Image 1 (cartoon, one colour):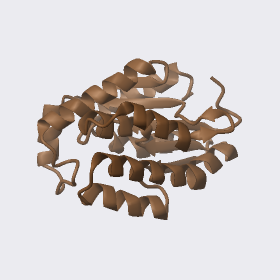
Image 2 (cartoon, helix red, strand yellow):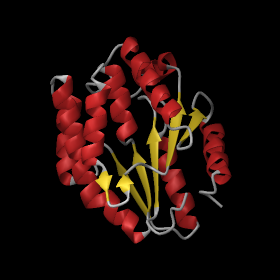
Image 3 (cartoon, helix red, strand yellow):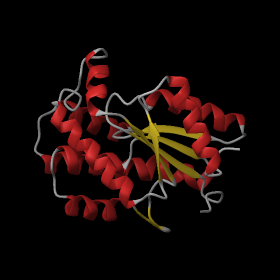
Length: 213
């Protein structure tokens, strides 16, 4: 896998409460220390338009198709405005969620047709080199019951975070399916440990892949 010419694309995935976001800044610092330029971003979001769509998706009631269309519309703008230019510059792009989250949340959690999601993926993520996907996906694996307990002690929940446990169990299964379909891209990280232990696992896994030196 050659990632030098067009940079490196790393996505962070996991159900709400898995703690993935706490490690993105640390990894950004690690890459910066190695002399790499880093673009730190998130989905839905990453551009003014995509952030506006994120607010709608997280707070407004809508049917699953509308939700999926808004998420992919945000992704298209994000790719065009941020991700593709950064990769062309040779940046390391660290993205808090990408398309795997759509298959997990809209596909798994909402039960939306995965064939339609796959078609949208093909349309939205087409690039000169084929389908744009992360080079590496760090999946922070956490029992949905533990995640729910963490969320209950945190911030006021949004429209997704306030879903029942059964929803997150379906989201977890959605992530597992994506991992099974792309084992070379996914790196499962056991997230039910101390922050330091999880961070050590992240570094070790990326060194094995040759992503970190």
